[in-house]
Image (cartoon, rainbow, N blue to C red):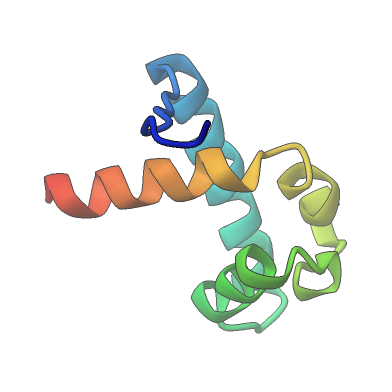
Length: 81
């Protein structure tokens, strides 16, 4: 029943949109004096939106990104560098 490996794919256009959104969130967190990497990681791990500031609508923006797709894009980017 569960003996097949699931595959997961995110198209390039969606990755570009996620990157733009993540950069906007990163900038908003930086401007508010937070450590943006720590805050974004906290959000990804917990899905608790309070890790992200409401400044410049960042909290709303990041909630439009699917966390699984974001993790896939991040791992792909890390391994390609």
